[in-house]
Length: 402
Image 1 (spheres, helix red, strand yellow):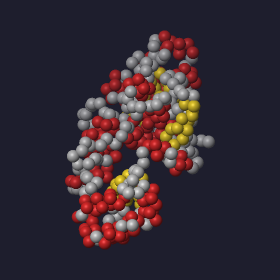
Image 2 (cartoon, helix red, strand yellow):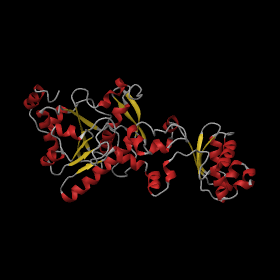
Image 3 (tube, one colour):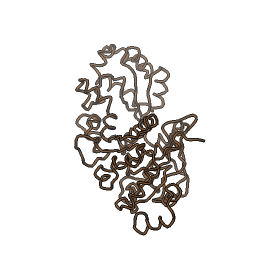
Image 4 (cartoon, one colour):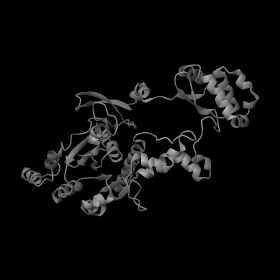
């Protein structure tokens, strides 16, 4: 079956997470993604086991999943001969994607102006830390950028440490933004015949991730920037609550009807009759007392009982699952948000995250996990770049390729 992005060739000069996951989205839907890596060590993501950057089990899920459906070329871009190979690759590419620093790219003669001169149709995409303008040039990690966006400061209980959203959440969002920018630029190129330069920064992506509260603050609501206690909320019917076995999230408007239905679900007639809670303003003003009362009712039974009772009353609520719960969710498997793929490293099928978007006629797939370092170098040089074997041997002799 034809894939949606079949015929698009991407030169993927990225490492770690944001850049590789941007290229992964394109590869999942059929783009021919050629991952260019340094001959010694390759993408640093290959080494997460040795540097203990995060727990990965018995196979390197960090690298293999975000580099799935890709080919790998090992090229030493510090050598002129390596740059020559890259230039021939650029001639045949639609997209150049990199999250290397702009000075790093300049030093290897891979600037936008240089590559544009080779291929005017090229979409040149960078993933910077903080954007192209403003002069900020310092290391950017998912957690350090989350820290400066204000998102972390908004989360958690007052007086307690701010909460980090989790390993790679901002990087993953930045990757989606980068893939979106690439598709927009390709659409424009198909209309005009000209490529362009785009940047999707980690900072910009995470500011957008914080958008609901950030926009509220920009509109004049200073409280949006602050941590808020779950015990003192504007609407106690839109809040997290403990049950006998796990937390749940209740999402209901602060209306008299919704409160009456909640009291029926809880079998709490005394709350419905409590004069403090009988009006919208009263429930808002007495939120601490109401939250405490709801805590007392909810923590005596398991979450399943309460969710069933709330559903019967037309109230939206959900368990707050952990990752083990989510991994067993049949809804996620039925929609291929989780899938299985063969892992050569451990010689078995493994569970992997699937695709977040489904297309009815040109669906994506996880055909292969990440490639071995440089596994496609010679075949690509012969078949795609049309080098002769003696030329390839000469490149090897000069150290441009392994």
